[in-house]
Length: 391
Image (tube, rainbow, N blue to C red; front, side):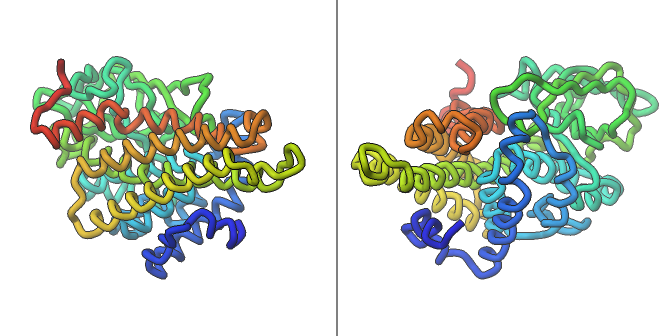
């Protein structure tokens, strides 16, 4: 990407707000995206293929469990993780989603709520990308309302027996370990279920119109026997999974702006070279208005994400602030990707260009880790003091 292109993406000079270390992390991940993701992403998307071999490369890059300390984890700042998420999602939401499921969900659950033995067993190899984890919370009939989950874990003399079903579980069919949330006699608890455990079936959901370079599955648990060591000892109630979801939602606020920026830059470049009626598209007022509107929202959204990152690094970030970032940035990113496609005309519906692929992916990003409606209700409860989740 040329310096002139980057200048047109950062009119407010937001880069001046970043430290040298933060800029170095961003450039490292940007280079990786340019070399390892962009050349192949259209084919991966077309083939509905997740490149599992990319996992150890992402581990070497230092973006798996990036914000976690110890156990082989990179221990980087929240802003550095956010910048990495932005650059990865500029490549594709599916690749950033892998990093999020692995680090913000599965690894965070083990790091935050696991025993010392569980941390030592799983985290170092997950940080290296040698092992893959997934996070099984959503169910066929309990998406936005996890308190209604029907997956159950019954305690026995030998440990636990797990029964139930989950849906839209990222990476489940290729995971080496599942973090599974289930109802017990003492409320919702988390369990670690290694790959190959009898009674577990993970089936990829196909065909999909979105997140095609990623893996989401239906998972069933049929009398799955687990030892007493399977339970995450620190996780009690919904606070356990919600703490992980907030980590993922934070990364999404950054990542969505990466997809938006890439869509804008694709449209800007195309508009400068595509001639219509004897002049480039970028020379028309209507096109310039579209480009300006896109840029304004990208700059605002990036500044919002950076502010959230500074709050997080200072230990002050609140759940309602994360909801505001996720709600706004994904909503605006979808608008930007769709508008960018209009500048590309008919060519924009091919995989030669990224905006419509980004728009399709963002429909999934908009839905997972809390829909627009859920984040609206979280913010509504915060500003009114009245919970309106149940009619």
